[in-house]
Length: 145
Image 1: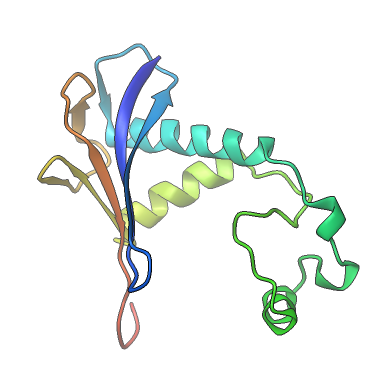
Image 2 (image 1 turned 180 degrees about the vertical axis):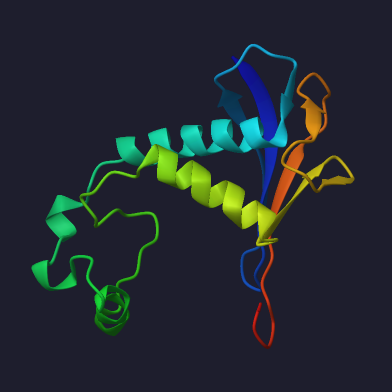
């Protein structure tokens, strides 16, 4: 097992959160590709998500995940992104493929220290003390196409 450090950034006017979180990767290798890095991180996150308990006492059958799920939660005034209302477990393979496709499509950027990582095939060292930073990119206007 290798431990890496990931910067978690949540920007906002009221409560900006900046934290460096250790993440355990299921590998003994010192050098891996970005492709493998994403697979390991998504695996860790999916396992963590799938272990979270479902908020049974808070489940309202009218608000179970459907097309109108989010608007109903917003109307009720209860939107809690740390609670899990969906009883379905996350699909590891699908999540890994989605993360790699999102990276290739430029939906988020990865930095190792100050250097941006731009290719899934790029080899990175897990022995350096530098932190990884993931930044979700948001399009401000127009369309992506």
